[in-house]
Picture 1 (cartoon, helix red, strand yellow):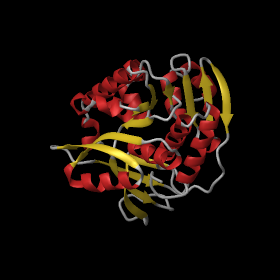
Picture 2 (cartoon, rainbow, N blue to C red):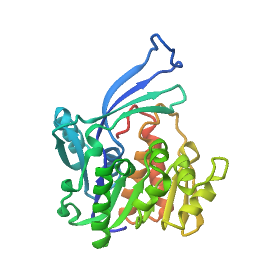
Picture 3 (cartoon, rainbow, N blue to C red):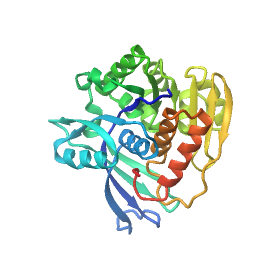
Picture 4 (cartoon, rainbow, N blue to C red):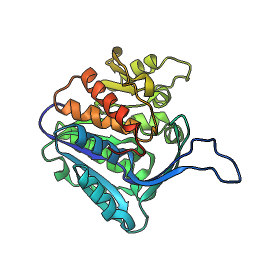
Length: 299
């Protein structure tokens, strides 16, 4: 996955409504909060962090609604990403409401909108011209049309010798789809980037089981597995064994929205510049540490 080629991200662009509420939510009345409307989406966030932390060209394929297409395109261009945004004629841009508590942890309310309406017709083979790596947002696998698009992109990358990574994206959606269906759809992927909950689900192991065991099990299917663990850092497993444990950067967290996306972007950018998995995970942890000190999921 190393080399001077571009990074192509295929994923989601959404509008984030981030509400930070220092006090617990109070039912049936008001709760004071700091609320911002920001550009987001796991795929788009990862692309922006990769562009910020690396030197490779970063491209993004996603689908948005007409009502906010220009705003999202400008935000991506300003972040150093080359977007190819397909405008959906029927659905608005996806929207995520992120409720962020005092502990900086977040709960999402998600309306996927146009983002999961990506389809094989949106794919253009030229997107891979000069690309060294393809990254697929896991959200793509949770709807039929976008899953088909992800598999088209994956097959095209494998045919051209381009390495591929996947971020499972959502333990909630993953549980609904079914871990086996997800793993079957992403067969042939080189790098898997789950968080702890997603790793346990995909490995078919109960939560009390150590995450190291889950990472080891998954690395028997995917050559390189990097499990993000929030304040505990990251765990790397390769071909059936743990090869590194990476500590997180100590910071005072404000909002954990997009922290995993920041890790992904920093990790992939470092890998494209020749870093080994452990070095790349450290770069990912640095990006994630910066991400949680600010509101929203972008640099």
